[in-house]
Length: 481
Image (cartoon, rainbow, N blue to C red; front, side):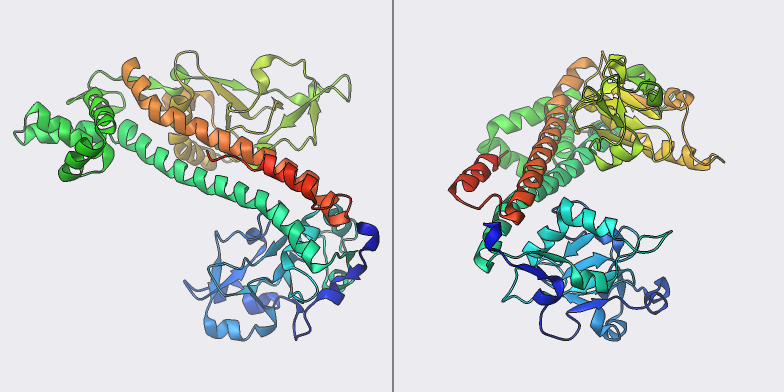
């Protein structure tokens, strides 16, 4: 237990080699003028995180040439090395994964690096130590600098923590990593589902590809059956031979595909939106959904500090969770209360649309809660997001500090809406995928909370990685979804 673990400093567990502890290059030496299309990636603050489990974000990496990287030899990081931010968001920490795409990176001028002595410590254990709320609070409380928080190499070297034996470190890491890996898998699955649904929605409801395929087949002198086959190919992305094989090997799936293709008309009609499929309606966003604005919640503070709803503003929508920084009365009108699965649209500042998965909360002004009595969630969610790029352009053009859209823009945002039978059929795919995405996000939220609860207890030795702890983790390990 923790009473038997020695207190050690970072300096004591650093590798016995040159530049095991080092800072990044001077700013002018690694400025943007040296960035190239490919080469050695540079790790900046945007590639690190304050969220546990996100050891390194490879998105948005910039590069310097291999020749330039050689001049930064002391600032090179490799697999297993840890990175810390020393200016700005100083509680950021990252680690180069053992299966990282690149063998080497360069840290920026605002980062520090640590190479751990593998005979003394597991790098992932040190990562979890510095991701813990206790250590992050300690770093923030002892920051240097006034306008911009700082955390220097001298401070990093002197940071102390309890260090269990290597075997215990690895057991702790395995327990926490089990949860992190599942959270990451959920995230990757959701990205794949997202790409799939966006492609389907654009093809069916924006580009009308199955309808156009039918029209092209008929105009070429084909029969109705030829037109139907063309639509099936447009929907599935399969050729005629592949569809023949699908019919023989998976007749049920083939029949479902054929039934979906039959629902697409084989002609277009003029509308205010332009040409849309025959029989479809042209409706504005505010005709298919209700956009309920939130409240100025500073006027609705809780009467009892123990009975409240966390306030969701644009910042919390971006984070994906309510941080409880502000609180509101639970007695506000229900239309301004959101819960898991609700569609939320920020119409001011950073315009975005998302399905909320952060629990019951109070919605602040500048955010719409989007609902509908007549149309399913997947339909108004995807159409709102379809118009988001245009809304963002409108907001950016406004000569004000914080751009926004108005309700008149919802009236101008037109949508091609099919009949109820088509919506029901399409919903078998698009609704189920959206529900799966929400399910995976809620599962990840639960696993994150479990990991965060276990983390300080495991690191302090209050909870050992015993059979009891392992049983807890096994129960938390999600079933295949």
